[in-house]
Image (cartoon, rainbow, N blue to C red; front, side, top):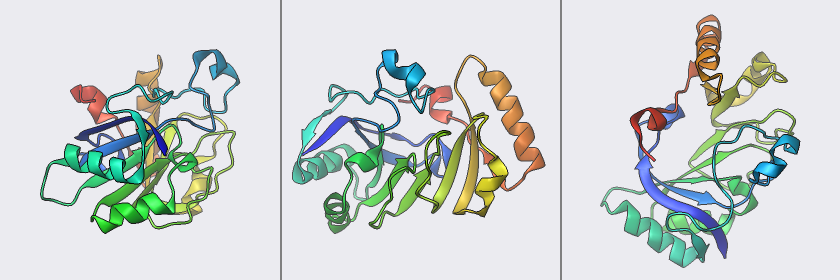
Length: 207
């Protein structure tokens, strides 16, 4: 059984797939923060803005492979191939070959948003890695590398040797968001290998 915080259909608002209709499956749990505020200061990732604790979100609960596939199909509600984004928390704590194989049998296009600290040893159609300072990056190839900016411990240029198709800087959504955005823009202008990723869903008020 998989512990799922929430499942919902929306428009992807970040990175290379911005504007893409997708069903998001948010797994409960993360290996870089408990999700509880009392543990944030001691966490590896201190800036997460996502609730991934428990199974009490929209369509949240405990799912078997069969019931999860059925729920995704119900929410997708289209004759086009379903585009499914597995996210978290950290989806690789639960996502496995059996679930991905089941998705492919029903022609789902599969994507993952991961912190890259757990190796992916099965085939996913789209891999987005968002590394976190203070953790070991084990997934060093994929479709997009999306770095939340700033993380002072990172040498961004060092990422450019990794095997990704797209390199994104995403301004950290904090009290310094305006300054973070201005500095991210400046970095991208000086380093055109990097593209700016804006959380468009927040601007548009889309969940």
